[in-house]
Length: 122
Image (cartoon, rainbow, N blue to C red; front, side, top):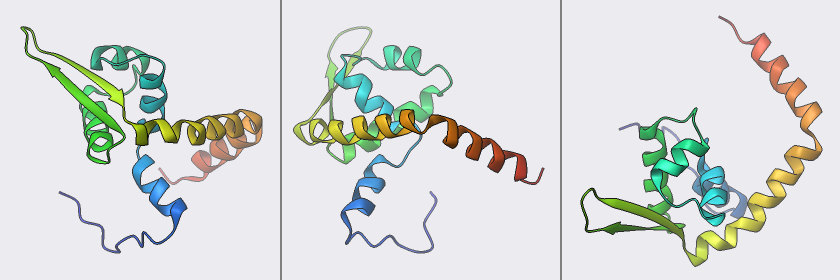
């Protein structure tokens, strides 16, 4: 497993928030669970470009951080559902503000990101 060479200093609230939301799909997964998408297969349909493995890893991390709870139903085939915890619910306003900011600055951000990609060496 990868070990960071320089440990994060978790003495700043924004660093803590970034640490628990770090991952391409985590904020989208939290928003989707809040909208009622609770089964991994439905999450996969919501995010078709994400692999099942990546979704499972990020869901496990969200569970480990206490943002979601996982219910495994004892039936065949096994059924799993995810629900937001109280801590996870408290992050929804942050995710909403991030989405609003991204939408408000979409054009500038898309240009900057495209410029960065064009400048990367092959």
